[in-house]
Image (tube, rainbow, N blue to C red; front, side):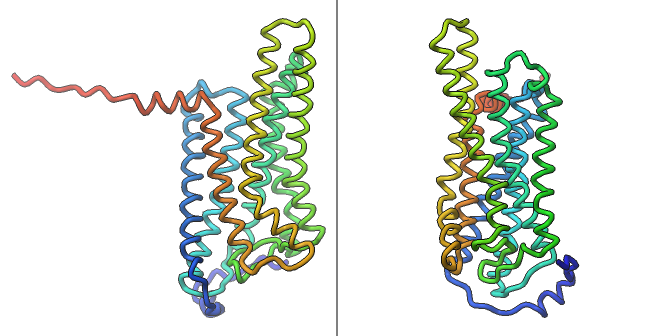
Length: 314
């Protein structure tokens, strides 16, 4: 695929074509921008709190930070999508800009790393309970290595999509995407980037649930059982985040299934990305709500008041 796009704005306008727009385009574009900005602010604030508070320098918080970082990157990609779409809708033109494909590449990749961040959290909780004496698997270096591998895999697996030109500009939805249709490209992307990590998280939760249940039926130290139940609770919260995302993004799933048999509705991607933006925002709110230490630290910073010194006037 030829990736050498013209970046001359005059040339872009010359090659653009005036098109009619629906009355709901602009309000939806604005909503997309608002949701993306809110997701960026929440994920960015969480990351800043973790960076400047040394009490968060732990492996569990590192894994949570990985989720927030991937969500931040994903939200930035969605924001870039929304701004580009809004500009074209306001001008009533169809025009692919120089960064359309790259924008999609980054968004797809960060979305994949976001899905795998759930898996990494579940794996770590499982290791703590089932292999409590294996300090290598629990070590910072090993967990950081897994994070690096998921980010590398999230970007490398999409390179063939770039080189073969499978990410194309959709005129009706003003976005570059892998077309929704029954194809190996779409199936592989769904399988690697979404289905596999989600199924593995659910599998780990089931295995850990059965393991903890078996532990409770035997005579074991109470502190060991309490710790196992705590980790199970953490994995359960991860499953809740996944279910939350899946529920909100259900229309996207419906459109994918429809595309296997017939052409999806004309503006299906606009509708899908509205739900995806809401999903990311809700997940970030849930992450903040579930992480007690983050809430505590935030409340302390908000309640802290600077000492005001009133000079004595003789």
